[in-house]
Length: 265
Image 1 (cartoon, rainbow, N blue to C red):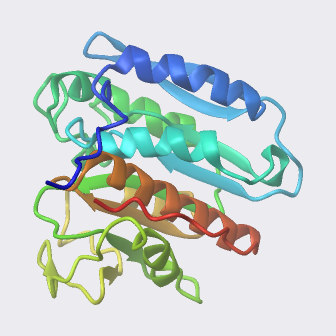
Image 2: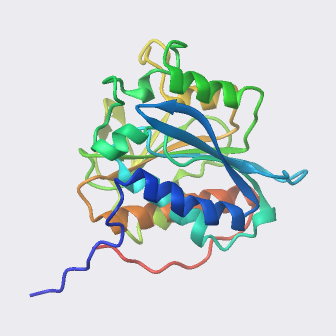
């Protein structure tokens, strides 16, 4: 029988373990880890530079707004821990986990049963309101929101129409070393081609605003939502997120991506 590779991320739903691992990684990159809100009995954290580098691009990265998507939170941390980019190549604002209660309880929603990624139009939700306040006045060259999807048969990317050239194809090509690309022609009611859902913002079609709407409309030059298939091996999902983020950041910095080793299982 073929040997089954053990999962490396065995404590993916342990929020305290996640934050403890973030602290030394953040320090190594000249970043500070600071609480910005509380929800469900847990502190929510933001990571940002202690001393921003003038004239360097600003990168936004978030994960874990849905608590049953631990490939996103593990991938977010592992990218920063393993990137070959120098700490002074860019400025990073990251949100390691936007829904700690959901992560701990393996639930998509928060403790109040809300899908936080449909509340960015609503100023009555404390954690997303605090998130928006922290973003006020900020501008990013690149924004990446990491997610997972139980219906997916491979990795796919939402790329909000905007600047050219488009980057999603190169990002998926990097991830394809670890996971197949989603082959569906329609994803969430939208046309998909080779794992790319490229769309304009339509407030009438989605009146409950996701995080990506706020980023695109108010903060980011380029906004991407990355979705890995929840039924795939966790390590492969994490590796795919790492590959996508590394490629996107390097495209933003106009640097060639490094070679990667496939671990697709």
